[in-house]
Image (tube, rainbow, N blue to C red; front, side):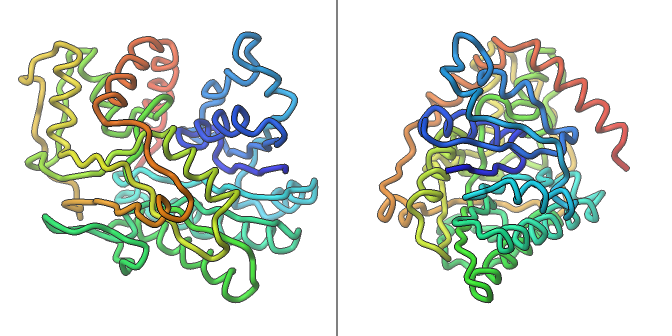
Length: 338
């Protein structure tokens, strides 16, 4: 099977490609990424490494292209694509608040262009990777299930909800064999440092203040990216067409707990914590019930949070050159943002 992975130079996409090529040695991957500020081809150096590649390079291709470019997408699909795993998206909530148009363009229009190309070229499966943020905010109790109504509260989550509805419509209207996955907060290697965990690690290492929104008690369910990659691969191969699958890590933590854990692991003082004005429309709590994917596809997370966060912190400690390179891209992107 030849799998088109969109956004494969990003955090989750690159981890998925590395997992997939290692786990399914008869399949190949075509990675399409626009290489915006969050796309980093160094995430995939393992593929061409003489020590870790294990023949992956012969089953891997990369093409730089924007999913909103319909002509380019049609040309790529014409090369023969059996399945699509669609990660490409603008995903940082803070950026969506100041630049919502970019999120609508990539997340809604880009998805629609991919769906049209997949339909024209007879793709056998289209897996759309979404987020639990489309469900909105939870109170102190309860969990998101696949039946929870969509109630997005940020331009980012609204654009993802819009793309989810388009994917559903292409199944109902055209019979395109699709699945939608909705995950909780990911963490792990190669995450771009605008997100909470890598940002706090790098700020702490530099003895710089760690900005925490509001009172720091917003709750997220944390999912190691390798567990997410396994789940998406299961949905690709065994998911029932038209179905939604929630993917959660059984690891609820407040943002303040996360920051304190990082400081403790690095031997840094809690005096580095700096509470800042809360984000606009900041959802209080997310929590996923992954019972459906566990029951129907046999998936369970392998990582506990304690193990995963320890490994993640030490990955950043051991990959300072990668950190310096992406921090440079982050500085450039922040200069471009309105």
